[in-house]
Each structure stands twice: as structure tokens, then as C-alpha cells.
Amino acid sequence: MGKVAVAFAAAAVVAACSVAAVMVSRRVKRRRKWRNVVEILKEFEEGCDTPVGRLRQVVDAMAVEMHAGLASEGGSKLKMLLTYVHDLPNGTEKGTYYALHLGGTYFRILRVHLGGERSYLDVQDVERHPIPSHLMNSTSEVVLFNFLAFSLERFIQKEGNESSSQGVKRELAFTFSFPVKHTSISSGVLIKWTKGFEISEMVGKDIAECLQGALNRRGLDIHVSALVNDTVGALSLGYYHDPDTVVAVVFGTGSNACYLERTDAIIKCQGLLTTSGTMVVNMEWGNFWSSHLPRTAYDIDLDAESSNPNDMGFEKMIAGLYLGDIVRRVILRMSQESDIFGPYSSVFSEPYVLRTNAVSAMHEDDTPELQEVARILKDLGVSDVPLKVRKVVVKICDVVTRRAGRLAAAGIAGILKKIGRDGGGGITSGRSRSEVQMQRRTVVAVEGGLYMNYTMFREYMEEALVEILGEEVRQYVVVKAMEDGSSIGSALLVASLHS
Ligand code: BGC
Figure 1 (tube, protein in one colour):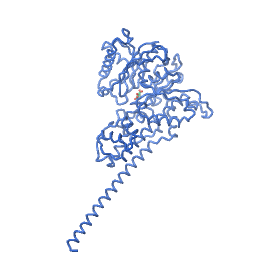
Figure 2: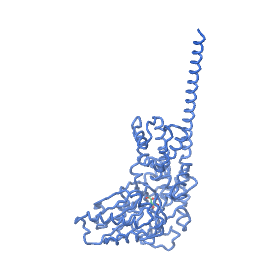
Figure 3: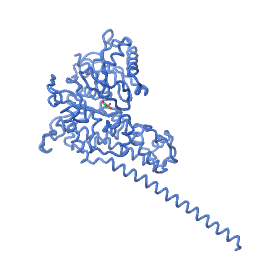
Figure 4: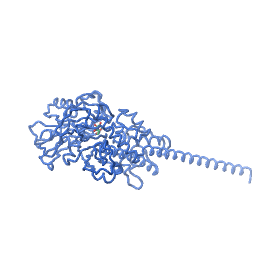
């Protein structure tokens, strides 16, 4: 071989070696990055773990905090608010009533007609609209209430001559899904905003008065007869259909629960007398906190960057507004520490860009190649994500939703424990489960988009309820879905006030 040929051969060998070295080094880097991803996932999964022992601790903490919140004002993070609702609709109500519901994402208007028998409940018109975002953060409440009055006016104009309430003053329930300190069933002041609403001027104002003022300004002959939390509306509808309903829970954009409490157990309000000896208490459980809740670094960051830091800690782990954002935060960290989503994309830096309905669609994607996951990621601007990475995304959704569903179950079991319907005879009894005969059928009314539309959330909640209560006790606890329950139930409540 000539010298030139030798030189060529040597150069070729060197080149081949360097190519191989580059390839090996890339493969090593890729492996290292994938290991990072696996590590992040593992750490997250461990951080969200909710074995039944931990859930039981959450159950106990919920029941203890309920006691503390009933004992004194400010005694717990659970506000345990009085609602002045002591008689729930029983089926004898008659007439036509209206409800206007300001929720977290939508507002609804509807009219119900009642014929005096339980079976004669006619929900005649339902309008459902997204709440324009500028109204959630406007500087003045007048803009929001004018808008609500205007929408109600349009709704009523569409009735034409059909409505049987022609010529009669219309009675309206205002379902207001935020914490209110009531002074009566029809009045109360806003304590604080939640779920991203921020009209600071409104805190401390009487909400029913604000709406009544706006209706009067438009010359509408409508009377705001009741100011109702959405959970209380759901409880009313539940009770109307089934008097064993004593608890109602909302899993929507936000989350909360209410239940029927004995007035003598509401110690912070001594001497409170009602004809039924009971009152509905709005727990505002979104603000529940316990060191037993499995909190991760992602939850801490979400809270710190939210419009209400250090507030509504439980809600931020279980409600629809937040689940998507927890998933987004985990994906963001993975994309920063690896290139599994392709070259670093800023899309996951955008808060709330990943909605919980997208999480549920990805989680429940049953196509073999996870095409729905690919489509949703592509819509967000991240294309060509390999199958193994799509599987990671599904896993993150699963971890977040499993934790939410299981904590939701623990919350419900906490209420059952407080009222002695958990098969253990209540928080103070000290009797062992086996000593107690599970006594009464207990219905829990449940409402909200997260619960209605996200099957896996429902299933995880159901599974954990059985784990916590045991098969036998679980048979006495009926969880009933109430579509539009908050709005319809609030209208029924107004009807019961007029019957
Ligand atoms: C509010 C509650 C409401 C719940 C569900 C929470 O953010 O504080 O009043 O019931 O959301 O809509």
C-alpha cells in the first residue's frame, strides 16, 4: 500500500472512531436525560402517594377541623359558615322560580316550574355561558352586576307570554359560588374571592344587594329572595328528591362541601334556634389544610404563583381549575431537564395553558398509539412527541387525578365521620367499628364538571371511599350525581321559602 493510501485509511479510521464516539456520547446523554425524566416522574409519584393509612389521617383531620370551625370564629381554616337554611324543599312547592348562578367558569340562568308534587319539577329553560374573563378581574363590581342583570333581562324577554309568572314579581335565587358571611338567607357579604376572580372592591359588600341594585337600575321587577352557595343548591335538589340527603359536594372549577348540622353543635353561635333544629353549614372545605396532605414542590409553586397564595390549599389539590396546571408544571420541569418534548419550547411556561378537560381527554385516551395525547400536545404547539413520552404524559395525568380523587373521598369520609355516619359512630364515640351497627342510609349529592365529565376522577374517588369506609359501610352511603343541581336546587329553595 502506498503512503497516500495508508494516510487515507488512517484518516478514515479516525473519522469513523470520532463518529462512533459522537454517537455513543449522544446515546449516553440521551440515556442520562431519559433517566432524569424517569427520576422526576418517580419522585412526583412518591410525593403524591395516598395509601389508605394517610387517607385515614386526612379523614380524622377533616373531622377535627370541622369541630374547631364550629367551636369558634377563626378556630380553624375551615370557616364552617352559617347559611340560615334550615328547611330544605320537600316536594310540596308550587310556582315558577328563577335562578342565576355565578360559578367559576360559567354562569347559568334557568327557570323551574313546580306543580306541588315531587314528580312535577319542570326545568323550563337553561342558559349557560362562559364568564367573560374581563369581568372576573375588572376594577369595579358594577360592570359584573350590570352584565348579570342584562343577561337576566334578555332571558326574561325570550319568555314571551309562555311563562306562568307573567305580571307577577319574579322570585330569584342567586347562586353565588364563593365564600359569603350570611346575615340571613337573602343577604351576606363576600369574604374573599377564589378561583382566579379578583374584583377587590367587592370584598365586604352585600352580594344580594349588589345584584338587586343592578336589577333595579334596569327596571326589572325581580326580587333576589335567596343568596345560595352552589353546594347548598345541590343539597336542596338532593333533599327534594331524597330526604336522606345530608351532604353535598361540588367538584368543578373549585371545590366545596356543605351538610346538615344540628344547631346545638354550632357552638360559636349559641342560642341559634331553628324550627328543624338543624342548619346547613357551608364548610368552604377548599381552605382545609392538614400536614397529612401529600404536597409536592409543584403544589407549592402553583400556590405561590396563584392570585390567592396561602389560601385554598385543599382546593388547589382537588379542583378542576388546578389539576391541569399541576400536570403542566411537571411536564415543564421534564422539558427543561431533557429534550423529550423536542427542542425546549416555552409553551409549558404559560400558566393554565393546559386545561383539566385536556388532562381528562389525554388520561382517558384509549387509542393504541395515544393519538388523542398527540393531538392535544400538537394543538399546544408540541409536535412529533414519541409514544414513550406520550405514555409519560398519561402517567402524570394519572398521578395528579388519582391523588385528587382519593383526597376528595377522604374529605367526604371526614364529613361522614363528623356526623356519625361513617360506621364508627362519630368522632367522639370511641367505639370500635365492629361494635357499631351501620345505622342509616346517607345520601351525598355531588355536582360539578370535574365529577360529571372526568370518569377516572370519579372512579378513583369511589375506590378510595370503599377503602376508607369498608365494603359494608359503603353500601349505606349513596353518592348521587346532580346535573345542574346547584342552580335548580337554589330555585327550589326559593320556592320553599314561598310555600
Ligand atoms: C368557593 C366555594 C364554592 C366552590 C365550588 C370555591 O372556590 O370558595 O364557595 O362552593 O368553589 O364552586
